[in-house]
Length: 353
Ligand code: NAP
Image 1 (cartoon, helix red, strand yellow):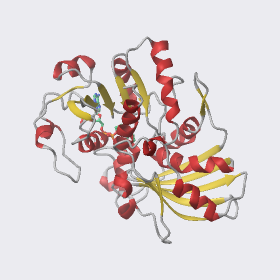
Image 2 (cartoon, protein in one colour; image 1 turned 135 degrees about the vertical axis):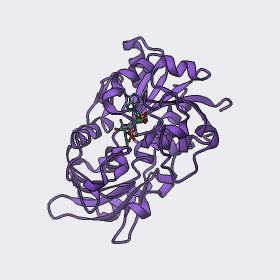
Image 3 (cartoon, helix red, strand yellow; image 1 turned 90 degrees about the vertical axis):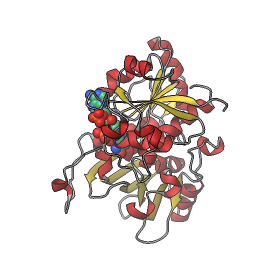
Image 4 (cartoon, helix red, strand yellow; image 1 turned 90 degrees about the horizontal axis):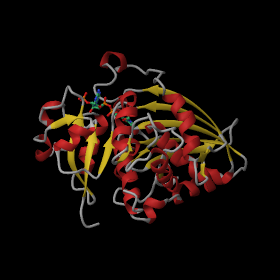
């Protein structure tokens, strides 16, 4: 890769936008050119537009950059021509804004608006890299120079990564109950008086996303669109008093009856295109299995593989289903900005962005 690609971040001041900024510092292929957010932030220096919530220092050059409105005209006026766009806009806004950008640029979206569009990939690079071919059809159908590609919802990503290696045993039914971190609700998110000393057994729209997205991700691309996978999935979602890292309790019904050792082996050995291609953000192991009886835990395990590995533990037989396990993923790293950057790396490596 000779020249770094210049990128714009839409929603740069939010929980996911800040992760994008953090992860794109010193990225070998991408360089931040434009930061965009709402009109509340536009016109301010980045450091005055939002409280920086990452563990690492806000880079000086980013602190001084101006924030612009998240529209094509403002972004084009703000910097040298951008090559691609990362979007972490709110779902209700992303639909139309991302379409404006998609007509001109490759758009890597963290928002839900276009995930289920028939000509839009819903990508996890380890699982369905062949789905990226869909953007060629999208460009033809929509007459676009650019395209939109999406990543799944954060609780779906970690679950789907663990489901992929189980498909070989005949996946029939999946039940998942989540314990989701506060940063998943963005900033400022859930009011402290609602979540301290508490668990909230409802996250708007989350169960519906989990129950539909995994079927598309694990479905087959037939050269035109994706035929959904055929297993059944039921999700129950809860918000818990944890900063980062979604923990999920997962119950699986398989056609076959593999031993717990065989299941552990397919988890541990699982690798995909990012590992083969040695993409810069790819973790060595997409799934890490822990053996302690009380792991994974958000505080100790969310940063595994720089926050890009899914940590699985407590693999055990179940009296009703075939087996059960716990899985944990970092929702703003693998589940959001890290996943978005890994997707972009896949497109670049395939010459599509
Ligand atoms: P957030 O913290 O609320 O940030 C939202 C961002 O969008 C901010 O930069 C905000 O700018 C900007 N924005 C809001 N209204 C806007 C408008 N009218 N015009 C232009 N920009 C506007 O949310 P988040 O958690 O980062 O989530 C961003 C997206 O990623 C959402 O679609 C979410 O569903 C998705 N996602 C989040 C996670 C996660 O773990 N948090 C994981 C996966 C996917 P201002 O600061 O100027 O208001």
